[in-house]
Image (cartoon, rainbow, N blue to C red; front, side, top):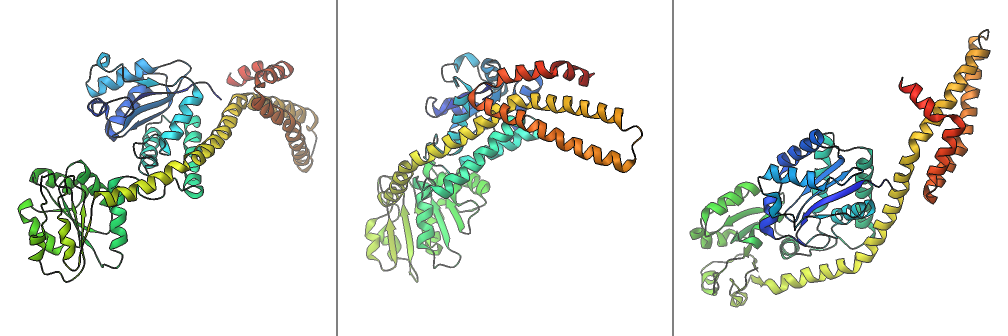
Length: 422
C-alpha cells in the first residue's frame, strides 16, 4: 500500500467536550480548512470529518504534516495550539489510518456502537473534499470501498439493527405503538440533552411534533431548527389533551404529569406517556386510568440494551468484513505503484508499432493499412498482457520494484517517459 495516508485529530475517547467544541467545524469551516491545506500545504486526498464526537483530518503525503495541519485548524478556530497538543492523536502508518477511517465510518468508533448517522456525515465530508478538488484517486477509491463495505455490513450482519441509544429506542417504541393511529401527534416536554436528542430523531418524520420547555427561548430555537411547533410551558397541560404521545424529560423532584391532571382529561383514545426523566416526571398511577399507558426509562433502556447487545455480538463479523475490504483495497493501492510503469511500457510498444507501420505501409491501400493496424494492435495487447499480470502479481508479493527496474532497463522506459514530456 502507498505509505502516505495519515490522520490527525481529536475524539471523544481522549478529549473532553469543552475541547472538542473549540475545534468543531461546520460545512463552511471545513471548506475553509480544505482551501487552506490546498493552497498552503502539499497534502492531497484530504478528508475533514467533524462531528460532535470528533474532528479528524485524513490526508496523503510522504511526510508527517500533523503540526502544519493542526496549526491551520487552531488558527481557523481562534484557539491556542500549545494548549491542545496533549489531546491530538495521529496514525503510526498508512494501514492504521485506512483502518481507522473504516472503523469510524461504519460506527465501530462511535459513542453509540453502530451509529447510523456517522456514515452520512462521512459522505458529506467526502463531498466537501470533492467540491474543493482535494479528493484524488486514492481517496475516491477508498471512500467508495468504505460505502460498499457499509452496504455489506447492513445486509450481512445485525450490526445496524435496533435502537442502541435511549433517544433512538424511544422513537422506535413510538413507531411501534402508534402503528394504528392516523397522523399521530407527539408532544415533547423538556429540552435538556436527552430531550434535544429525541427532537433530532424526529426530524423528517411523519409525526406532528410540538415542543415545550421551561426556557421558552431554547424551545423556540430547537423548534426552528427541527421544523416543529412550539408552545409555552404553561400551556403544556392543555396540549397533553391533544397529543397521542407525550415524551417527558423534565428535571424535577416530583412528577410533573400527575394522575389528577390526566383524570381531568376526557380520554377518547389511547394516550401514551414516555418518561425519560430521572427522577420520574410521569406518575405511574396514571396507568389506572383507562386508555393511559406509561413507559419509563427502564423500559426504554432495556430496549436499547437488547439492541446494543446484538450490535456488540456482531462486531467480529463487521471486523472480518472490514479486513476483507482492506485487503482488496491494499491490492488496488499496490497496483497504483505499477500503473505508471504499465503506461510507460504501453507507450513504448505503441511507439515501436507506429514506427514500423510507417516504414512498411507507405504503399499499402487504405484497406490493407486498416487490417495491419488492427492485427498489430491485437498483437501488442497480447504482448502487454503477461508483463501486466506479472507486475500485479509482484505487487501482491511485495516484489514490484524489482520487476519495474527490469522493465525500465529492457525498454529504456525512463528515457521514453522524458521524451513524451518534451
